[in-house]
Image (cartoon, rainbow, N blue to C red; front, top):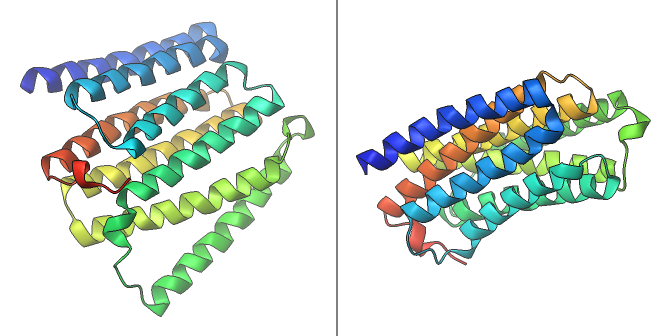
Length: 234
């Protein structure tokens, strides 16, 4: 197990360096290729870590991550952009579904509900402002609807993650929150880079994405260690 952890750490550092170097010297088009192979390598690490996988949600999460990265090869196509957002929406749904059985029994008070509704409202407002900042050339089929839907879903899953961590306060709950933070920051950085043309954010996207994938492996490891992974509802 120690050798596995060492190999994972070295691989993470190597992948961050390679992905950043490729973007800096060859551009985002080639960077999309290294991003896909990086995600695939994390999937291989997962298969090595869990020799027998029966949870369809977990396999679905990796499938959607790989699908999204594959679609980035042609992200300028409006239909590809639409399916990228759909794949990310489904990804967050599956992530939320993984922990939902653990948090659905938790009760929330009126104050927490007000905070949640306020956060959703603020998120929608910020998303609308972001949409107004975008060039008309970046609009595509159902873009406004998908972006707002994605934002609301992120708030919902983030709330689930925070509730999960507050209730259990263990390593798996910590890494789950880290997954959400990393993937959200990755998506936000990519949107800023691709749609607002601040190319330096492609580097932030790479670092956040690989951090999220690392946290995903850690989360699944501790879920399995605590006996919850194989008992998740399908």
